[in-house]
Image (cartoon, rainbow, N blue to C red; front, side, top):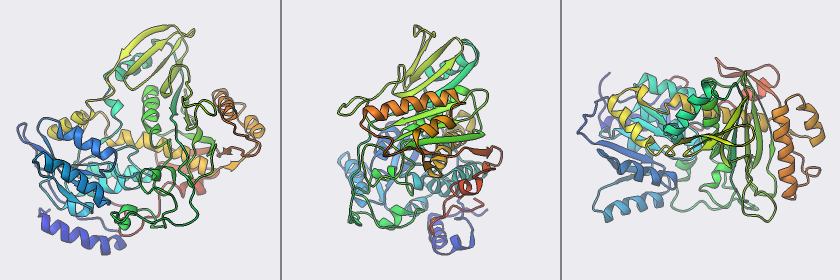
Length: 488
């Protein structure tokens, strides 16, 4: 393939935005495959710099042999702020609002993306096609289908693509999960993930809100529907509405979902899923659940995930614990259990007595791990290759799909339906107790009971009862020209 210059890539990619998306073709690929030597700088561009992306700048610009040379954000205010920060240090940073313009620069070696979730997959696919390596924040996708397209793009264009689940680089957790999987505490019975993190109301508006003047709203919406802004804050609160976010299950929870799956040693999606939840404690413009249980029916040991956004009781500022954790995991084995998360954890006997500590560092070397793989060109050097990110992100999507297809159901009826699943029943009983002490009357606001959904784990498509509706939520309807093609 003829190598594209920056000028030609820009002409062809912008033309693709208006025309090629309609024909189902992809953005043309650059062939920026030059391997950087050990003494050459890796030049990085950061896309999405309003929140976590600003941390990316610090993580990567501080690594030996790495320079952040460009940033991109649909909010010009975010771009100008980062450029000014570099100017004060007598360093040059190029700013963009359109990622397509950034990708024309074939001197950029790698792109990191910390955009809202609905942009993650498209930035990754486009960057791979443009010859860039990619560090993509969690969840890697907004829907299940996107993740497979990201993997396909990474493999086709021989790109290094790292997922931003940094705890995969925590040596203490790696040691702990090997210890468990070797049977040192007997057979694993279940793995639980917890996201007990306070999330307050985002408020309620009575009509469309003005978009900040510094924002290119068409670019901000990108693949999502370009609808009137129906919440107080454009930024961050996008997490709590379905067109752009995935709730806390796909925000903070994806980290713990990944750990809970890693502990089980499961490499594929779960064959069955169901969810119970709701948005309790306030009436606002959010549509995602703030209290949720997801049951992933792995065999022989299930994965159960719990989200709580309300405090441990009404009027309190502290959050609940399950055994020794709030944001982390617990893995129950026949002869004891493990509790941990960021920075490792402990194993305990069944009486709660500590057995062994696995000291970790929280995965602080995750970004350096990406750069190592960029230099080596070995996917195997990555601690969190895109395929790992796809599976864990998709478990979150599976839970949300069940929830979104559910109906409000009396608690007694829910308890009856799940009675045969003792671990799920335990979670639901604690779910009820938690909401009761927060003043939530489940008789007046019943939980949503999602249906059991069965997945063909090879095709990553739902089958059987409720599958037609569930498969409609595997892949979004993209807004042209921001389309991920069928063939990347």
